[in-house]
Length: 162
Length: 462
Image (cartoon, rainbow over all chains, first blue to last red; front, side):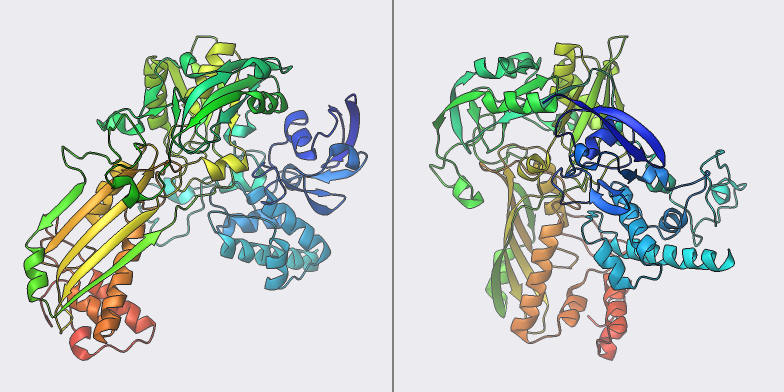
């Protein structure tokens, strides 16, 4: 099977690149597009560090064959801050000390973005459920949960003042 | 508050730069790396993608303990995309031990196995290829013929007469400390204490190996530079340790290597050993290509060095009032097949015994034992953590046997300022008494007045 040209909308921009058969979305983002925020932790869909949003849904990009999402819309951590400002989730992660080594952070933020997009007022249980596929071996889960709740509160407040 | 990425934000850490007021303690200080982490801009080693990057994968031992009769590289070399298959003969100085930098020996571990494998997963050949897939295919096609040797997996069995010899460079299945078969503590007369004790209480404690399991696996990218040096992007926890050991293995001056590191996607001690950089450097030199060698998740779990399995026997001489007058400890630390950092871990354990208690008679034998298991090494407080599990379990067991409150037993035996510890250091700045009192108060655990009035700086209540 020959390589093929794949088109994706990545962080709002139209991108085209050549993908070998069976190439994963993670490999294409990192190696073809230079977007390295999504990480390879296990390459088997178990750790969540490669999570990106595909048409708004969080997906383990290490398990997605890129041709299966051709033409789709992908959002990575690089596309979260707009106009140079960190968004509510990012700034809440900073303020709540929700990062340690930083390796799981990209995946954690992307599942949080997906959660808050569909549920602006999540309970603590909702947050725990949302991040349940993401491993943090520094075991900083408590501040991560708090950061996501804080981000939700900040986003609701902004919606009111806007 | 709003954080800006662009234009560059120069407002961060204003408090720390603010004119020598030294007001940081008690204030909230942002982590210096947090903004990189939340934007994906933090550069981990694997985010470095030089052009013409080659990939290294290891062919590993399928045996716990065996002689290597033959290695056939023919099929591996025939895999399309395979550039080189490296063996021990390609490594300038194939034998090392990481602690040689501080004078600990002997060299006991090959970079690539020579005539024998001593644990399951030990590296034998390194396959360098154009793609990761070709490197994996090549590694799978290396053929090794083994002559099996009997393995030994238990620390006490390994020390028995007639046990299979694991590591010939040591000559016996234990590390030798300045001519002694183990790290020893001799303080007072423990046998006399047992003879006059009201109770002699002994239990055995043991732990399994524990894998650190960082989310980012161990790895590096080595890039040959135009000036003949090698630039090593690594997630090691020990940049200088890695640089110096790698230089010794490559038989090259230290200034021929440059390490770019310090960003570690979780380590917990598991990224202190020097295991990926030396062979990746050999591969980069042999191919004149940038080379990436990174463990997959299975390798991280199987061959990256875990916390050692430990076994402790603790025997206490205890009086009816709860005073412990003697403690005898035999500790076995399973170093696995090679020393790595275990000789140091065992010394650390010995220095920690008999725990934070003033016990006048102490005897300890701390053995660093070689077995055919994965070499163990550093992990969060190694040497101390499992010893503490055993020592504090022992304190609870003693309290239960005497029908005593476990906190009162500890307060009665806790060291005070001025006590001489078993390794002849005078205890200073002790605070165990106060910590226990506070913990009791916070948890609503009632202590009698005499115990509440105890202090680390006086002998009151003893």
